[in-house]
Image 1 (cartoon, rainbow, N blue to C red):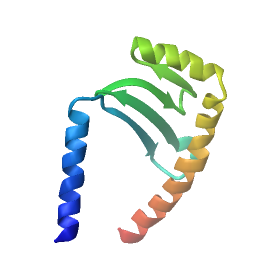
Image 2: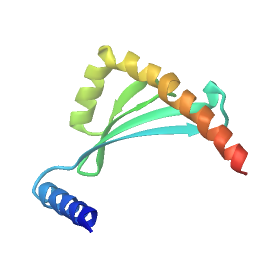
Image 3: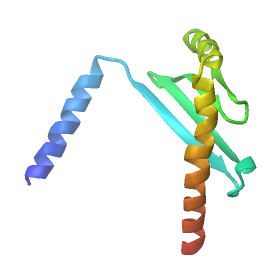
Image 4: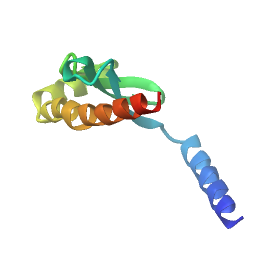
Length: 109
């Protein structure tokens, strides 16, 4: 019963906190058809108030802005070390996890 109250309290606080502010979120997606690295795409997207402002796609290998603010930051990120780090994330994050997920999916089917 105590854990139910804590969970309800947390949800209430989050709802009240975000009601008057801004919503910022980031997603990471791995698209794949097989476990081969060439068939895997790493996409990192940033949103502000549910509007996509900037994303990195490993197929394009650079940041792309979708708003004025996003275009400005995409240019800045493409000229800095962040673009190199994002290019390496495909190998570190997607290729490793896709291999695990693919084997698990085949074992259960």
